[in-house]
Length: 503
Image 1: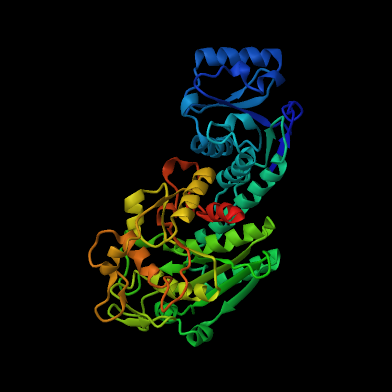
Image 2: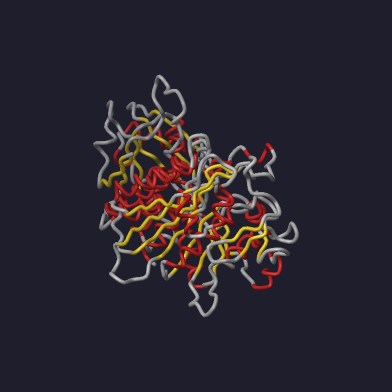
């Protein structure tokens, strides 16, 4: 999709084969004749729209594709009360515009930038422009790789003209948003790929391709290298599969020489059967997306590289398949991790935290200034938050607040849960140092976070490293009302990219 700025759209609204469809976003109190696009219409078209609004008040959730007397097609969309319009609603409005256009098979759109300005986003219009472009891209996505092409073609929007008179810096912001949206969609492509086609080796190859295209150094460690590093967690989980585990290391080092990097760690379970603790049939279907944390890390780094952000960023993705077989690891096994701590396996379906334990220890070797791990870790996070926000845990209140604020700005929401030391009692092992499950069925998202904390917290006089854990399980797939296609949401690529641009 091509998104461009324009000071006038009279030409793009002209009747003809290449005409753009203007979008009138109408708040309840708005008169359609005061909309910026109204002045570009013919006299007859103006009369038609005025009479239409008199007879059919445009309320929230109403959408009207109209053909005017001149033959020009327009979209009239209600977005509710002006007093309630805010950045969150602007984000949904941007997605909704594209979703409606796709439904109506409209290829070219014209939108008014000021329609999306709200009381809580007007102070940073560059960020708003970036976010709008990202949302347009996200709403224009559908995973069609395995579908037979339709005779009439796929109904994707091709161009969006954004009308704005004061354009200072907005063109660059729109381009940045396009790039971020593209990388979110690229992450969705990886996550949506069926498990039979997405293996640890394939995921590693995708990382290598990102490195080749965007100048990121990529190293892939095989099973022998993992054994040499004593990564018993990754090796243990990967034992049951014929697809051998990989450890993906991505280094984007464009910051000042000697500056400590930010390390991103992403869970890369390319398919999760649950292992010998096999998942029930209603829980196993979407487990090809259990590598969504890994794909988010990979494509956040791709976005940062394409945006030429001058930072030092390292990405780590432990990639395994969790399969039941005669060689699988067992409930009751005790695995020895890279730092020497042992994990008592109470349930082979709590495998993500086991592979992340080794990755977090490796992250410490990078001497980072911040470590952020991202994982589809627990269904408990979804029980706590529904599908609207990822759970976030952090040892730094300041960093956590920045993540929450960034998520609010870009529409990739996170919400904090506690990381209190009292919860450490819940994951103490009987025959190992820690158990990979809590002692009861309550607070599973917290138990998972507290488990990971054991492998990043300082030991033996080490300096504490600020750490963030994002349990993105709630955001793996979208809620029905989000105007996003079925499958992966691409969270939290946008969140990580915007946060790291400014951290």
